[in-house]
Image 1 (tube, one colour):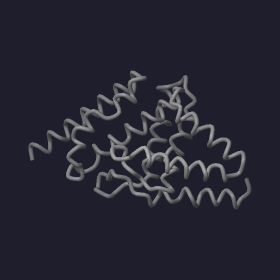
Image 2 (cartoon, rainbow, N blue to C red):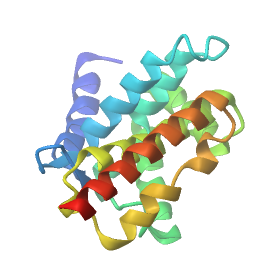
Image 3 (cartoon, one colour):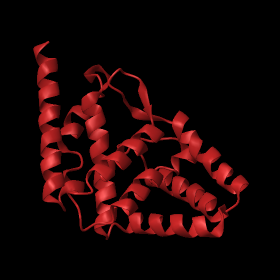
Length: 189
């Protein structure tokens, strides 16, 4: 890959800095897709010692690239994203990945294939972190930014994704405790 190709990739990825997500930050600002990707990457790195049998560097790579398709479509929250939306995003992402320098295209394609198959522990960990981070962020956001359905969603979402790991299941239970505490505080006020 030459320097121009490298810069071109970065210019596309930069779009995620300006692509808002459904969630807000603690101060009520809409978070970007790039911020979400950064934090799940940080989560993966911090779990290196909890999952010593896994290739955490690969998990971090998965976390970093998992939403690159949103450079082309924007973020569509999981609870309203349709199969047609997924197909469009996947198609545009695949076209872009196939246009990259061969070595980069090969690396990204292999990661996306593994992520989609959800057969390896690395892919399962990335997917769980993706879902868990969204709930953590909801718990951190002002409750007046929550939509009505999110009260129940925050109580139930991602238990299935965490189920393969006792550690992640414990984390999901702690996140649920935070959710219940946040809702209770709102009802008291």
